[in-house]
Length: 304
Image 1 (tube, rainbow, N blue to C red):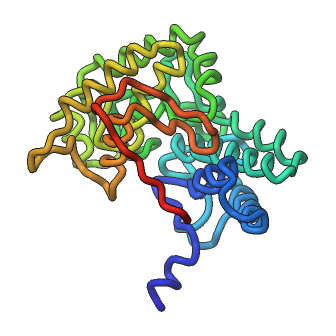
Image 2: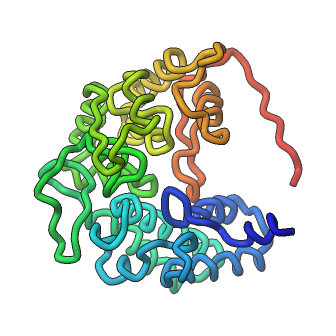
Image 3: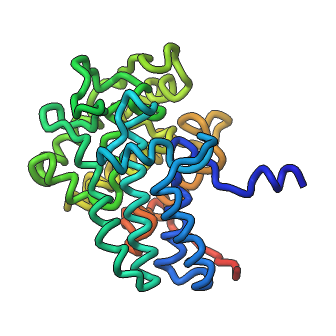
C-alpha cells in the first residue's frame, strides 16, 4: 500500500512534467474516455500554472516561466531543458484541448509552446540559459555538460523542439542552416567538459567511446536527432545515420548496447529504427519513416 501511495502523483523527471506527452498521445489517438481526458487536462493546466511545495512534483520554475517566458538560470537548475520541456508541455495541453473542443485554450497554449525561441542564441546557434535580465553567461562552451542542461551539453539539448522543427529552422536562418548545424553535430569530435557535474558521468564516457560526434546515442536527448533530417527534406541523411547507428553501435554481444539501456528506452529506439518508423513527436499523429533494416517483422497489438 505504501508503494502505491508513493506513486499517486507524476514525479517530474529530467526534467519537468512530460506526462503531458503521454496524455496528448492518448488524446490524438482516441484513447481514453472523455471524462478521463477532461480530468487529465485540468491536471495539466494546474501544473503548468502553479508550483508545488514539494519540488519533486509539477513544473519546477512554473511561475518564473509564466513571468519571463523562460526559466531564469539563476532560479532553477537545467534552465534550458526546463524551458524547452515546458514549451512542449504547453503544446501538449493545446492538443488535448483541441480534441476536447476547448478552443479558448488552444491559441493560448500554442502561443506559449513557442517560448523555446526566447532562449535561442543566434550568434552561436544553440539554446542557452538567460538570467532574469535576459542576459546569457559571458562564458560559453557548447561541450560543457550540466548546469543549464540535463545530462548533456548545448549540442545534445538545443534541438529539443519536437513540436516545431520548422520554427527551429527559421531561428537558424532556414532549413539549410539547420541541416548544416546537424551535419556539424554528427561530425564534431565527441569532446565534453564535466562543468556542472564536476566529475565525469557515464553518459559522457559512452558518447566518447561510441564516437558518433556529439550524437550521444546512449541517452534520450539524442534519440530524435537523426530523424530531424527527414523532416527538413533530407531523407537520405536520416537513413544513413540511423542505419549506421544500428549496425555500428548495437550488437548481440554482452556489451551490445552503446551505453545505459535505461529502462527499455534504448531498446525501444533500436526496435523502431530497425522497423523503419519513429514517433518523432507524441501529440502528433505523424511518424517519420526510414529505411527498413529487417527483412520482415510482425507487430502484434494487444487489446486494452
